Image (cartoon, rainbow, N blue to C red; front, side, top):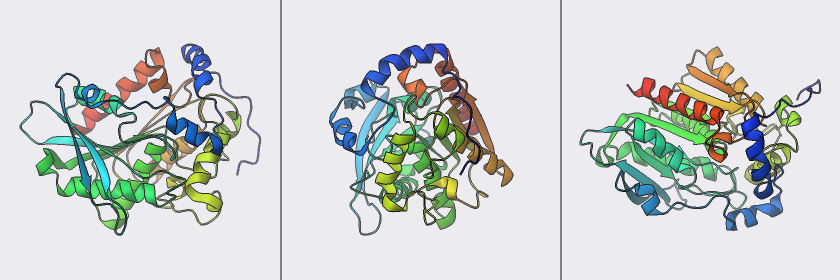
Length: 325
């Protein structure tokens, strides 16, 4: 809990501020529980078709239904394989965003395809059960089960099992971090890297940036409370929250794969994400951290033409190239 009230919020980047005026009409900062169903039914996170995902033959699009966690339903994986290569490729295992309450395995995957156009990789995007109908640990366990199957069937999928990078944005970033912790602690697949984009990792919702950005931007403190309460119920903010659900709760960050962490300076998750990167370093780990000036939550997806969005996207590709070269 912060003991000193923070100052005024940092300003939005001018290009992003102009986009935010339009975005706010469709997606107000404060999501409440009664808005979850309308958001699921609306067009805010419109699905891409198989034809869209194929990109005129650049990718083969397949779906596989694979075993879920023990005693739970199967999990669907969306698999996008670049055309052409005959050698085993790295994989990007994608956990989608959506505040734990909306989205599916097509949400945000076009961004991953842009990476794979420059750094050839098989994309495996997992469909996990959503809260509040399926609270913790269902989402993270679904994501882990899909990863285990992917690693076990890597050769069949054209994947080099030793070069699987997990990646996710927002809630997907939190799930990616949670799966990396699970894989370490269970002796599961040895991940080659973790891309944590504006990750949602701290259910306590009490950092200076969470307080500063209340009522502003995209996904403010009220929305964050809605998402975490859907996932954790009455346990949210209390002493008994699993680090696999809220990775900021983890007491030991040693032995994790190299991380890329990025976040906007003008968003709820800024301080929890900066702290997580710092703790990775303090544990002897490797992390690259970017705090994009004036960035709101998910700015590069919602305003991709802005200069800061272009910089953010290029930095991720550069990191992947260095990691996988």
